Image (cartoon, rainbow, N blue to C red):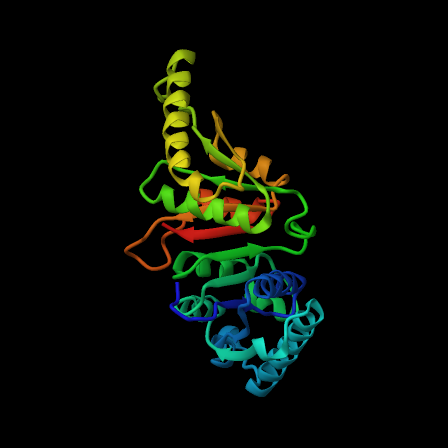
Length: 291
């Protein structure tokens, strides 16, 4: 997170519907919190280096980036954000790397989730993965197709909680986002029963004991945080299912799902299969914070 006196929200712009959905989210958040909005179009320099045997005219790419930014700025102005709080930049470099670097001075980064054609190819799915894996601040991943409803209309925020170190930070972020949206908070933890031919089978009593243990631990963490958020009503649910199945199935009822990623000593390798699966299949925007 930055130490700026005025919060900064950085949004990846690519001319796609997903990119415009990200702009809408970022602009509304900036308006609500008195933040500045930076709209960034990253021109992938591999295109100008002759990747795949094709060399693109840098002036054409620059003009396309400026056009995409102007469209995004127009949307932010329509939402009501003053022009002096909006900045636009066309930056040379891989989109994932550019956004990760900007996250070092931002308070929030917002990116679209999927893209397929035209300018959208500058922000394909690998971009959002790279940003989440390397960002220094929280990241919101949003999709126009999968998340069409206005954020806040459902009145419920979910937080997928693990029992690893850093879970308190993730849960605190869940309380913060529920307070921001005036929503209830649902805290979810999924216990994956052993699977496979040689997996040790658990009796119903043993599985029930694991559920009670996890429920008690999460409720204790929540009870420590809840007094700071008296306006947030919350529940704790521990399920016996694969985490990806449980969280994806619940995501359709959420305005936002809060998740945490751990620190990785190798840049770009901090995301496991669960996070990648949720980024691909969740039916609500994801708010991802680093533990």
